[in-house]
Image (tube, rainbow, N blue to C red; front, side, top):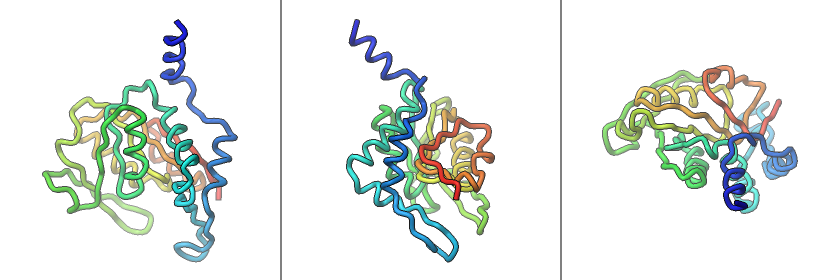
Length: 195
């Protein structure tokens, strides 16, 4: 009885927001670099968080906690930092991992999408056989800024018949309002910045 109770609690999707203490602790591990990549920009450098073994473990645990019990089949990670978090999250969720890459990087037949960014355009590709129709997928990346890359990835997955269970981000720059572009999806961001 005790084992069943513990398992039920562990897989319950009701606890979705990690404690403020966990988030504050993770934020303290992120280096702020002023004037990078250009003057006037404050860059949040996650490499200092990644190198901290306890911080990285807490990050993956906090992200996965939101999706445990939501029957995720695949985690999609966008090149390049989505490749850091995607496989670790997939492992924790007992799901597969699918890379979404820049054009020309995948060896088999692909589906491609081009999209506009605030400073130009970009494109992404996914293998055409990466997702089976009806599979529940989670899209993960390090940063939600304007939402262009995430929206393009969701579009690619939808074209392949995926059911999008959510989009997960380590950091969200709230002032850029990228969440508004993803209003049709469950968007979960662990750390929020307003500047």
